[in-house]
Length: 311
Image 1 (cartoon, helix red, strand yellow):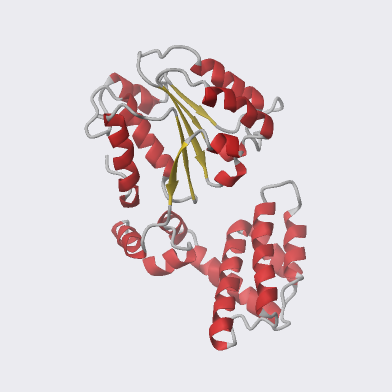
Image 2 (image 1 turned 45 degrees about the vertical axis):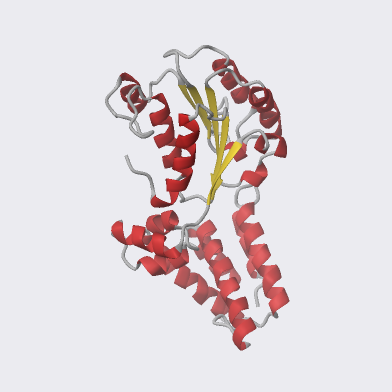
């Protein structure tokens, strides 16, 4: 099993630690969504539990591999959003889940080897859950591996982050990303990569779902609003109906391009009437609005307030 090309360095370092019998008891894998953190974890856990690994990769046919593939390995625990009593999925990881996890990890391994628990997304733990996890991190059981995955690690308390070995995934070089996208059969790889901000995983996912068209629509909408054409309420409805968070991503990109063009040539492609400082403030507002979609506030009001500021 081969990993993604930009995983190679992280993989080699982790396997070197394994060879020295110096693996940490807690890992924090972080970085933007789309860079393959979860695939990396699946590959690593499979190899860690495998009876006959080859260069850290699982054999795929031993008892451990077969149980893991079936989702029934007794020494693997996966923790994510649970269900409330009314059957609705929670939007955060709560303290009772962490207490159950800690109790499970306090027991002996069924196979006499590693016990592995993943928390994904770890940055969704509420404060009480994060505090409950500290005891497990401070007093890990022998041969217990706790793996936290987070797209936004800054949401985790420093006390959690400082007790984990951090593996941070960064955007690969453009040439490496383009080569991979072309090997994956992505058409117009350069445009897809630009739309995804250099993130090859997002570029592949977005390439086949109309993201490039939405990117152009966002720029047309902002240009029209800056010229006094169209109504913000119409734009809000259109954005809400189709990938609003992604459209906000593209709005931030377009604003950044406007600022760059304004600084170099005095005019930008969106023909905004705002000065550079105001554009910078609006860029920040776009990202705050995108973050706001994670919470309980109404998306239409968030978007309307944002677009009413655009000139």
